[in-house]
Amino acid sequence: VPGGWGVYDQAADAERRERRETLEGLRVVLAGAPGAGELEVHYQPQVAASGVVVGAEALVRWRHPDRGLLAPAAFLDLAEERGLMGALTARVLRRAAADAAGWARRGHRLRVSVNVSTSVLVDPGLMPLVEEVLARTPLAASDLVLEITETMLMKDPERALPTARRLAERGVGLSIDDYGTGYASMGYLDDLPATELKLDRAFTARLGRRERTAAIVRTTVDLADRLGLRLVAEGVEDDATLRALHGLGVDETQGYLHSRPLDAAAFGCWLDERAAR
Ligand code: C2E
Ligand code: CA
Ligand code: CA
Ligand code: CA
Image: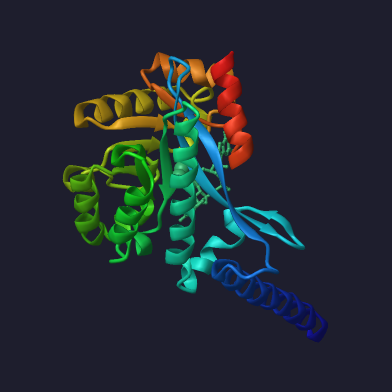
């Protein structure tokens, strides 16, 4: 139907235009030029069973002048596709380290975790960037964690290995994000000097609904324990799930229950308030 094709063309056109505008905007933002808004780093706490806040995950946002606060899903794929991920990650890493140094000055020493894609993990520029960040901020190497998703890791485990080893030598943490969503996960675990497993929120969400899930979580606790890895469960939204996780031996948790991701200022206040109570 000609009319049908017309509608399709219009939709495709609109999508192409939006992608082009998003890409141009991203370039402007990353160049630090005005007019396209700002990249912000928001933080979500990681809380031990004792109640102590032990870490924060840095999550990028784009405060867009017309479109409001954009989540990573709105621009990360495009950034990756167009080779902008290195610049974006450098931005996030520098900001996160500076913010973490700020919290430490206010008496809140915690780890900060930054997400990296495979392209960034294998980029020769990554280690110099990490060195620069560690030299410029009083952040301890072990208080910096890079998160890489299991799926990305599985695509090319060999290529990730050299950087993983360098990070380990330097004492920087490496977390396997969305753990349990890849397949044949045991092979790479044997080689990779990771420091943390981040249990995917699919397991957390199913914990109250499926009995088998508890067995999987318990096995993961045991595995992490035996490999000397920290385990963090993500996506904890309610008290019952938190108690179930603690009951299964998961110490550290992250999710809306503790807090939604907050901008740096709000997160600083959140830390202060929590310490005061
Ligand atoms: P992720 O690394 O798995 O991050 C967790 C995501 O789950 C975040 O979404 C967070 O806001 C959301 N979340 C946290 N707690 C809960 C909860 O209790 N329930 C539910 N349903 N969701 C929760 P966000 O911020 O939209 O980030 C999406 C993804 O974008 C991240 O998934 C990560 O893969 C990627 N990402 C974010 N920032 C960066 C970055 O700076 N660099 C790179 N390479 N990737 C990033
Ligand atoms: Ca993550
Ligand atoms: Ca995750
Ligand atoms: Ca995820």
